[in-house]
Image (cartoon, rainbow, N blue to C red; front, side, top):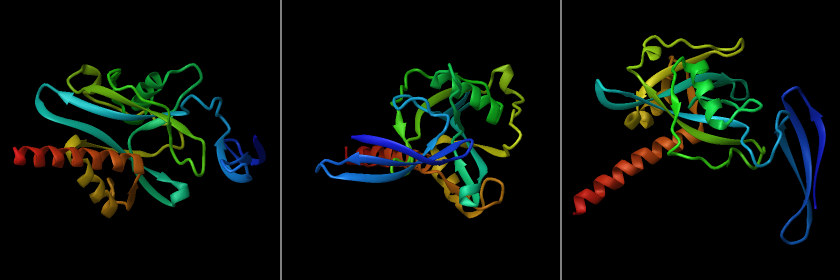
Amino acid sequence: GFLRLAFGSTRWLALKTLTYTDAKNVERKWDMAERTTKKSMDKPDASVIIPILKSVKSSTLETILIEQYRPPLNGFSVEFPAGLIDEGETPQQAAVRELKEETGYVGTADDSFPSNVLCMSPGLTNEMVSIVVVNVDLDAPENQNPKQELEGAEDITLKRVPLLKMLKSMQDAGQNGLSKKMSMPIAMLYGFAMGVELGLKCSSDGAEKK
């Protein structure tokens, strides 16, 4: 059996106690948080965006990191752009919209990188996301003077960084942030950057052994 019992909620979050039967047929309880906007257990709530910035004037691929104040941390986080998926939107449509709102850049979703529905912090919440790669043409007219379209409570600092130097950028952010504030990278972003570095190291090590 599986039962959700809500015992408190705000406009955006509900606190619930789950009653479930484990693999040993023992009934147990688990406390969790859930978005009040959640409509499905098999669809993502939000899109996490990996922007890939390209220009014919440079061989260097760049991406965008954003920094914003997160009250639960009582501090600043460094993240990829991201946002909730609106009713009737696909994850790809939401990603393109949110990228423009948060950074001002206009891009197109790259369908060659499909994403599964992914959990975020499964010991605490059932929030789910999809990751969407968005290609941004820096030579396009609409990207010559990008301007953020932030909502009232949003205060987002952004920084363009070379894709292959993301890890160093975040390590620096841990010292003084993108805007001279102490900042904590979100785990998904840091893991992505470590994966890039690991791929480069493995490729280099493999080339040396040949």
